[in-house]
Length: 138
Image (cartoon, rainbow, N blue to C red):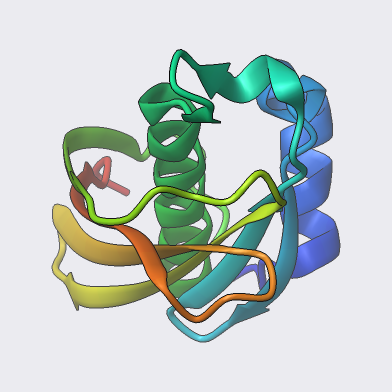
């Protein structure tokens, strides 16, 4: 199995997920069945009321799940999201946003992951997301 490192995943973002790259998303840490990603704060991400938009948080959570999955199954780029749930818990601060993801269960065809989102410098949970990815047959 190909080891998917921070550098490998950041190259995937840059070369194949260009809109995610344009948002500034980058992998910070990747381990066995875990990943931490970050999106830098930008005023363009705000929604009315002055908080980070839900689509920004969902994008980061989904990208983090993809990173977690690749640490588990290797470089299988055709794995796709089949379900994503998110609970918005606290108003994020106007700071960089971090996603910390982990594998809950990985089977032959489906993987279930969880991601917690935090504002930089805070341990207050901003959102919690769970999702399922479909793994293509090998």
